[in-house]
Length: 242
Image (cartoon, rainbow, N blue to C red):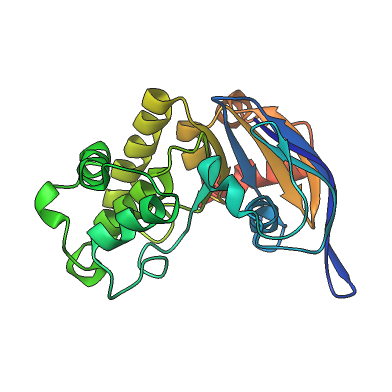
């Protein structure tokens, strides 16, 4: 469902990704982990068309991508961002936000689709005409997830989707994502530094360091603490000590 081959990204004279390669099967949940600045979010931005200067090959849902924005891919892949407040327009109601992609793509039955999506992400229908500031952080992230799913894409790119939320709310959003993945047969590519989140939500992971993949492993390696690389073992130790 997702293929990344020899992906190299440069920002001016600085190379931030070096020949990164991995693949994610349909219905799989795959995590990119590593310290801040390791290149995790850069990979998501390249897949989402937010970076135009890259080399290598990128594929999503059977389509080979080229650098630049790709509006035609909106029905195949969407992103959920870290900050649910920053990703929502402060003056647009939930109805406006959820209806917009339907209007752009000329899809019918907007009212029914919006109400069905509110139900799917666990938001009361009476919230439909509220503004983002009238919602809690967890509710705003539910709106962001709903917006990402409005066109029925099979792939979601998740950029630290719970890190800006209170700990008590994080579990609710993770359970929501896990349930939606199972119900809709979604493919996830998750960026996070939180290894317990990976253990709960993902099947496999890649560990990045300084723009390179150090190791790929099944999620069982997190539970057993058995990574092949020294850096992988170091991340496990930091997570447990933290």
